[in-house]
Image (tube, rainbow, N blue to C red; front, top):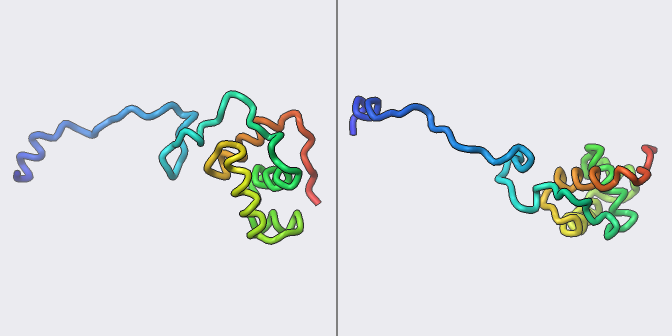
Length: 113
């Protein structure tokens, strides 16, 4: 098929229907676990340390920064996050932060040192 034939058959840009904005995540395809649940997440299943780590994740801190703030290594912070994700039913730190912020509106948050 030549260029002229392709131009002749061109029907314009293709438009497709996007999912609702509440489930669109930039950088990866949305999964069932990334959609924020209308119910409060199970924050009561988290340990005190996991709450602390998740608070700093929600504040936008990197793992190394969180480790320095709470007095542990970056690898320990990563391990805490590995335990937090399945407890909240999420796959990403952004989804975990959203779940934490939705569920902790009535919980006193730690203050910065």
